[in-house]
Image 1 (cartoon, rainbow, N blue to C red):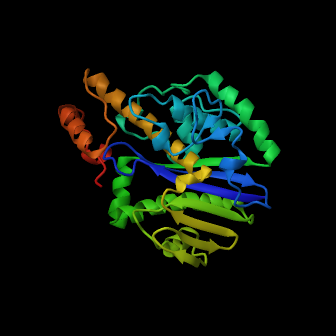
Image 2: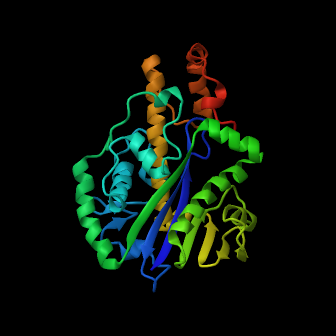
Image 3: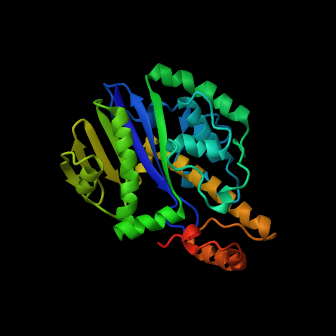
Length: 315
C-alpha cells in the first residue's frame, strides 16, 4: 500500500483562541500513490454539493463554515470522517481533543475550560453521521482506501506566545508545529511510499532545513523550490509545500478538523464571558473584533486576575 498525508491549519491570524494544525493520513493502493481521492470517491464525497446532494461534503473549511450559521455542516464532515477511523466517536469536546492529540494537548488550565464539557455532536444530528457512514464505508473498502488516522496539535495562546519567544518568528515557530505532525504521520507510514501535501508557511519557499530538524537530521533531497511549489524527498517520503493545498482531499479534511476544534474552543471561550457579561457579543477572535471584545471584558479580566498572556496571542 501507499500513504497520502494532508496537513493544514486554522486560526493563524486571530489574537484570541487556539491555533490548530491537523494531519490526516490515508492508505491507498500502492499502484496509485498519487490517486486523486476526489474523483475516486466522487460517488460518496463532494467538495461542490448541489441542492439535494446526499454525498458527504468535504472541502476547504472556509467554504463550509460560515460564522452565524452554526457548525452543522463542518461537524457532519468531521465526525463522519472520524467515525471511519475510530471504533467509537468522542462524546464531548474534551474527549475529542484527547483523542486527536494523543493526550498531548488536553483542555487547558484556562478558566473557560473548567466549565461543563460540550456534548458532541452539538449542531448536526447523530442520524446524519450514521447515514453518511453507511454510505461511505463500503465504497472505501471497495476502492482499497482507508483513513488511517487523524492527529492534531492545539496551540493555546500561552503556548503560542512561548513558541514565539523561543523562535522569534511566527512562521518559523508554527512550521515546527506542523512538521512535528508530519513526523508522526511519517512514522505511521513506515517504509511505505508516502506523499505529503502541506500549505506553504508564511510565504516561505525553502523547507529542507526545517524538514531535517523535525525528522531527526534525516538527509533531505531538494527536488524543487519556487513560489508555486517546493518539493523534497526523504527516503520513501515526498513532501510538497504549495499554496491552496486544500485542492487535495487529505488537506481539505485537515483544514476542516482544525477549524472544528478551534470553533469548539471559541464556543467555550464566548460562553464563559457571556455568562459573566449577559448581552456580550461573541467574537471569532480576529484582530479588530478581538480588541473590541478585550475592551468589553477588561473589568472582568482584572477582577479574575487573568494575565494577558493566557488569552491574548502576541502575534
